[in-house]
Amino acid sequence: MKLFEKYVAAALVSLAPIALALGVSQTTHASPIADETGLSGQVMPLGGVVSSRSNLAVSSDQKRIGSLYSLSSRETRMIGGVLGQVDYTLVPRRLSLYAGTPRSALADGEIALELGTRYLVDRVGLLTAAVIPVTVTDSEAWSDPFVVDVPREATDVDRRGLRLGLAGIAGTGLSVDYRLYRRNVDEERSGVALGLSPADRRRLARDGNEHRFDLNYRLAISDHLSLTPGVQYRRLDADGAANRGWLLRPQLSAQLDIARWQFSMTGYYGVDRYDARQPIYDEYRDGNQMGVMAGVRYAEPFGWSNWSVNAYGVWSERDSDIRFYDERTGLFAVGLGYRF
Image (tube, rainbow, N blue to C red; front, side, top):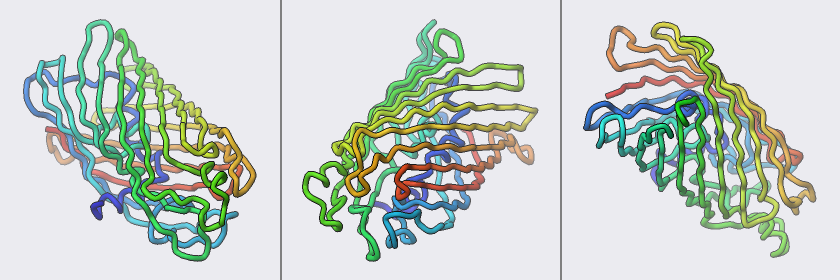
């Protein structure tokens, strides 16, 4: 795996709200297809600082943990990368092909490569179909997360998927999106260091499928203000029963446009439930998660056509009935975007 991918994956593995902050305003209505045949797209270098606490994040600071019953120590690091997408319009305002990391994918908390097509169907909406050959957000994991007082070993995760979406349904602000992921951990050794039985280790297996459904509705309150209520449902069909379950997460987004300024904010609260007890703790890893994301965009700084300056702030928490799975995140990032 490339060094850049490892660095970004370590920074983002537990930071799904970051991607949501970047992409939520782009997922609630049909994105227009270019009105001319040819190439178009966007690119946005990003840099910032993130502070987090997570026993599952793969990083050098979290390689050794001292307890299975407490949250890890806080680590602060710089993060950076480039998001972008290239579109090729085949039929103006009707059909295009695209490749890259589109903001629509980021709404799920994904930093992933998509290869897909978009087609505008009269009186139906904007249809999107894509394959997801690479995900950076979940590209590494600890082979055995439950190792104490000695360095843990990281292993690669092969995670890829498919996507179907429909936006601007029947000319309204309604959009739906479905993703299917397959996740395979190269060296799954959860529970080996604790001497668990083969049956208990099977309950901790992380391989499996993940289904994600998103439903959003954009409401135009005025020419400058819009509200977008939405809900996400995830079904985790992991091979291990202790990691098999579901998540339900309602959210509300607001966007205000004033001249060249755009202000956005999203808040969410979700609950997750699992099918079987975690064998190490003899408890379900049920819990809840909450977060707030805010963004500011300023278009054409210094009179630069097609450029924008972007800033984002994120706070999120995940509280589990098993403290080992708790997570805390704070982030601030800035980026310079360019459309072509």
